Image (cartoon, rainbow, N blue to C red):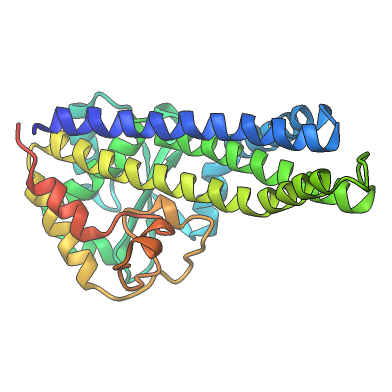
Length: 298
């Protein structure tokens, strides 16, 4: 299987998950609206969640960089890093992103920005010290691939969808418990149907989060493949992932809100072994990523 085949396969899987997500939201909104006899519920949730997410999208890069204590660097500060990013951008046909540095011994990196013209990549000092030139190229190629594939845009869309599910579920519970609903109290069937709605309201945000994490993991595989195609040397990223996985230093200012952005889990926890734990991972296991990279050919 060539790198192009792997990229196309990952794209199809991502779009399939997003399509399933949209169907899930429509079905959930219809079900809750039917139970409450309130058609405005879905419309209001979609409008409110979309507005809040769009507003945050325009400022998300600044927020993420500030949360991670990232400081912008110039060419004179780290000329080798700057040249590496510049050369890979030329090869990828991308505008030069801003480069940020995070003073932290943990080896990690992430990309952010609403589009390629307003993008940034951040590298930790631990990453720069740990990796050699070809390994750094693999990591930087991975982050540039996130930018090229519009992963920040996809992430924002998914955040909107998860927000809609959370709002719909929360409003359903509040309206049903605070104000009750118009139903026949003597009808056991109606009560059972309503209890199913309450159960769905509790489970829906969990299901939405699982879909979000599944899409995030697929985008990591896609960025790995993009890096291999950009550098034409998968072994660089393979060695980088091996070195990073062996380092057990967690990122100082890591948070669950930004963990999915990094090239590897910033908490450096133990890799999940069973299928249930893997469902809640923000990243695919590094062993699986290395295995996928090793199969690539050009």
